[in-house]
Structures are given as C-alpha cells and as structure tokens.
Amino acid sequence: MPKVNSGVVTGLSPPQPEEPYHILSNKQKWNLVILVSLASSFSPLSSNIYFPAIDTISKDLQVNASLVALTITVYMVVQGLAPSFLGAVSDAYGRRLAFTTTLVVYTAANLALAFTSNFPMLLALRALQAGGSAATISIGAGVIADIAWPQERGGFIGTNAGVRMTGQAIGPIIGGALNSIWGFQSIFWLLFTLSMIVLGALLIFLPETQRSIAGDGSIAVSGFQKPFIYFIKAPSVWTENTQTSSASTPRAPISFKEVFSPLAYIFEKDIAALLAWGAVAYTAWSMVTSSTTTMLLLGFPFLKPWQIGLCFLPNGLGCIVGSLSTGWYLDQSFNRALARYKVEHGIPLEDDIAHRRDFPYVQARLRLIPVFSIVLMACLAFYGPSFEFNDLRQQFGPNLAAPLILQFLISFSATAIFNINSTVLIDCFPERPASATALNNLCRCLLGAAGVSVIQPLIGAVKAMSAFFVVSGVVLLFTPLIWIEWKWGEKWRQQREERLAQQGKL
Image 1 (cartoon, rainbow, N blue to C red):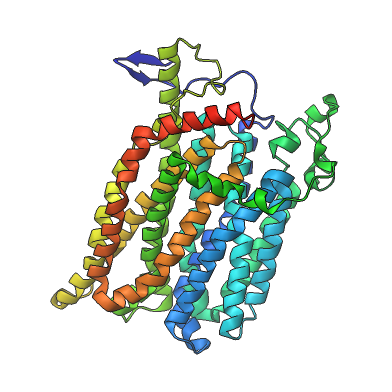
Image 2 (cartoon, rainbow, N blue to C red):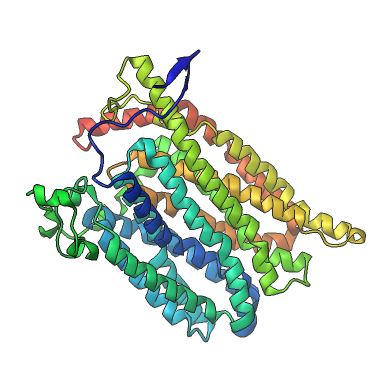
C-alpha cells in the first residue's frame, strides 16, 4: 500500500478498480498496442525514409531541391487534414473499418510511387500516401483509449510513440541504403511490402474496440467488425453474453459538421494552450529534421547518401528514448497524484475516481514539461552555430558530433512534449480520443508545414546560425503558454466538464 510522508506518496501504483475496464488481459493489451503502433509507424517512417533521397530525386526527376522540398510540405499538410475525417469515421463506425481504409489507400499509393517517373506524379502520390498513413496515429490512440485505464494509458501511449519513432530512427538509414543501391523507387517498394504485411495482421488479429460498438469487449460483434481469428476462436465471454453489437444497425452518414466538430475544441482555453505549444514544439523539430540533408551537404559535402541516412539516427533515437521514458513518467506521475488525491479526500485506494471531475488531470501530467521546454529552446539556439563553427575551424577538420548530439536532445525534448500533450488531450476527451488526437495532429502538421516551407529560404538568406536563433526565439515567445496551462488549465477543464454535463453531452 502506498505511504504518505510529508505530502509525498511513495510505493507501488494504486490498485485498479475491481471492475475491469476491458476484457483483454494485460498481455493482450500490450500485444494490441504493439500491433496498432506498427500500423501507426507508417506515418513517420514514410516521411523520414524519404529525406536521404532528396538530392537523388532532384537529379533523377530534373527538378531543383526546393521543388522536392515542396513534396514534404504537401505531405505534412495532408497529414494534418486527413485524420480529421478518418478520426470521425473511427469514433463513429469503429477502429477496424478506419484502419483498413487508411492502410488500403496507403498501400495503393506506395505501389504507384514505386513507378514514379516525373515530379507532378511524385507530388500527387505523396499527398495520397500522406492521406493513407496519417490517420493511423489518431486511430491507434483511439484503440488505446478504448482498452486502457487512465492509470496505464501513459505507458501505452509512450510505447506507441516509441514504436512509431523506431521507424523514424531506422527509416533514414534504410532509405539512404536503398537509394544508394537501387534508387529512390526502391524505398516505395519496401513500404508497399511492409504495409501489405501489417494490413493482413490487422485484419486477422485486431478486434473492434470502439466502446460504443463493442463495449468492454464482451459484446459480440459480427461481419467486418469481427477479426478473422475470432472465426476460429471467439472470446469465451461471448458464449455467456447474449448482448450483441449495434454495429450492424444502420448508422446515419457522417456529416460535415461531425467531421469538423472537434475544431470547436480550439476555442476551449486549456485546449488552445496545449495545441499551440505542442504545434510550436513540433514545428521547431520539423524544421530541424527537414533541413538536415541540406545542412549536412552544405557543411560536409563529402558525405554519401547512406552516410547521410546514418546522420538521422540520433534524431530517431532521441524520439524513441523520449517516447518510452515519457510514457513511464506519465504513469508514475499520474499514479502518485491519484494516490495523494485519494488520501486527501478519504477515498479507499481501490475505488475508482472516474466520476470525480475535480481530480487534477492536467497538473498530474504536466510536471516535467517546463524542463523539456527549456532543453528544447537551448538546443535549438546552439544547433545552427554547431554547423557554422565547423566552417570557422577548418584546421581541426570536420566535426559532426555537436550537431548530431543536439539533434538527439532536440528530438528527445520535443517528443516528450508531444506525448504529454497527447495524453492530456485524451484525458480531456475520452469519449472521442481519435478525433481529439486528429485535431492535435492537424494543428501540428499545418504549422509544421509552414515551418518546413520557410526554413530552407531562411537558411539561404541569413545562414544556419541566425536561422535557428530565430526559431529558438519564436519558441521562447510561446513558452508562457506552459505557465498559463499549469495555472488555469485544470480550472478551465473542470468548468468545461460541468458545462457539458449540464447540456447532457457528458
């Protein structure tokens, strides 16, 4: 049992309520998290595996590097827009249908990209590829929210992000190697093959988890909502439960209003602060990542494509470490806050507090976000000079250590901020987790696309040092949002829930 000493709770995590949140065992939940994380990894993998081939694509398709960079911007714009619709499909019609739709589109786009022969074709198909892969992140977050208590949600989300970021870490290495040996089209052949494998696995093993359709998993589903493995052996609880899913009941088509109704969350003060700060951090990280190839070739023109791919490894490793460590921290922070709250309110440790709107969800999650934000700003400020100092010290020879170490720290801190923001948003909107995540993705990607579109001209105009001083200054300008969220975010969240409860929407 946890102990309280001077207001600090120590010991094991508080026990979960006796009533299970989902019929899946802890092992089955982890297996499902890994599966949806593999599907979600296609979005960052498709983006980052492409970066080492930018120079080759420019030469093969006979277009300048700025036009090739436009395909990155278009990818990010579509990556932001697509989840808004498919997240609504996921929340309304189920995770299996949404996952399958996105992966079929993604697989077809990869097959077509493998035959790319001109720039317009590349641009259009990269947009289609983004549309097929982007929503997998929000749908995966929806699955996690369906099966997990808030107490364990942070670890699942951290692992989900860690698996996704593994693709981001190894993607540029693989992309650089494939591009060197077989050309850039071979990258899309690999993505086509991987997407076929994951699509097949989802059809076989992913059960419908949307709680309005399958409840806690004990409601029998049929037709497409039923994974192929259940035709061989269905859950034993189904034989004891005569309740059937309403999935077969005709549903009204999703309206334009429903698709974009999550946009109204932007006008909620606490959500606006979270979205804005997360989008700024994402944009800064995207500007670093998208300009890496150009920066490396300017500072180290002797690098080969596969070596450039290796230089993306610190970025990816930072994302993995940031994701996994933040997931662990989020669970620890939440459970300690939960135990302290129960002790202060005289609530038995085994009782559920889901009905208590006064639990401080926001502050339970945000304790370390100021630290991560300071690390991000400082590293951004030193990142540009780390390249230009090499130019000033030619007598010491080229040195890649400083920019690569800074890339690791930038990606680590930025990913930590992303994961904390994502978890808080799901806590705030547990009934529409995919839509909330899609909104987060929309804000990040649209602002990120703007950042990516200006970083190359900015570097060309004022050089790397001044360019990233500007980026760091913009991040500093938005840091008061952290204090605002910490000070008033919990109060605003509780006021919103009271308002929605009075309106019968909660």
